Amino acid sequence: MENAGSAPPVLTARRAGVLGCAQCGKVHLPGPERCARCGSVLESRDHTSLQRVWGWMFAGLVVYVPANVYPMLRTSMLGKTTDSTILGGVVDLIHHGSIGIAIIVFVASIVIPVAKFIAIAYLALSVTHRVRLSPGKRQHLYEVVEFIGRWSMIDVFVVAILSSLVRLDFAATINPGIAAVSFALSVAFTMLSALSFDSRLIWDASEEEDA
Amino acid sequence: MNHAVPSSLAAPSEAASPQAMPAPAFTAEEVARLIACPSCDALHEEQVLNNGEVARCVRCHGLLEAPRRSAMTRIIMLALAALILMVAAIFFPFLELSAAGLMQRSSLLDTVLAFSSGMTAPLTLAMAALIVVLPVLRFVLLVYVLGPMAIGWAPARYARPAFRVAEALRPWAMAEVFIVGVAVALVKVAGLAHLSIGPAFWAFVALVLVTVLKDNFMCRVSVWKTLEARRRS
Image (cartoon, rainbow over all chains, first blue to last red):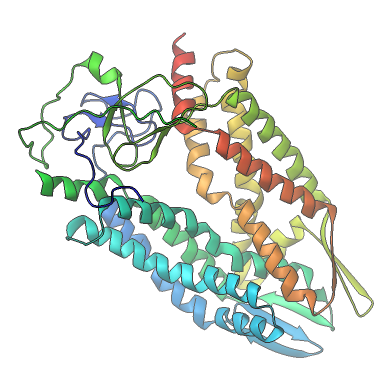
């Protein structure tokens, strides 16, 4: 790992009194509202960022509850219908002996969402509070959260594939449950939450300490 | 690969107030030679990079710029290949399932429409968007943005908003996630019935590989700079 303790002292665009474009990196003198190169909105810092992060995160948290409580899959085999929730699906996979797949599903639909809620909350709090993790590590954490969020969609896709594929009338039919909708929404909301975060805020706090 | 770490300027001795924007420390000409890290706002003096060189931020180690040789042509070719593969993936059978003398064929379209009944209907639209519409839209936008420039013309009229949209769509085009979903689904039904994989599945796998390759070639800052340079001339 690179020197995690102290970031090298650098001059940021904000301290130099200029504006850096968060899309393309072009530096502007204060004044224009949009970047001359790429046309994105120019802001020294996104001041609504944290509000949006928390808003989307709580929305995601709210729909994450029904996603776990209600059935994700409704399987009818020879007239017998069984509902399975997200966790139930994982348990079924373990009973079938496919431990590897069970781990994939467990990680994608339970570990990643929960870890994401915690990580986003931690990052948002770290802007206003003192935390132990260095900005470099927090930046890294943010990149991981941003990258990994979409992989939670796996379970929704599995449900869609299964219900389009297993339509053998009486023998076996699989239908999606309502939890699929709330889970998909939860993933989308947490992705929006992560995207709303202005990572430049991570570095500002440590800069103030240096100054 | 050789690292061209841009020289960063030393922080000024007098501490500027962090809340209010201080007066600009640079003139307009100086500003034109600087680049701000999009992730952490650190200023760097811009350096001319050769193809294959990578510039990273000295503070957060985020990617600043990574120009590649004939990247534009390659991105366009890969995007076109992806579009053709997508057509194949949509219309050929994707997976086949047989059990107890019954056979069920499922195409990508069927998968998208799986949620089309009852309370889960809105998910149909989302699925169609995530697996098919958004990836296709991204490819089309990239061809629209880079195509004219690759053959030496000025960028198309709406190239800037088009590239902004293409970049914003990036996290939402979930073709590769879908492939892992297919793998999980295969294992889940394997005990229940006999499964075989159709040609569309392989088309889709190829599509994912092409997408990953293309995203590796593409450097956002380089594209923006090329767009800017070609627009002026």
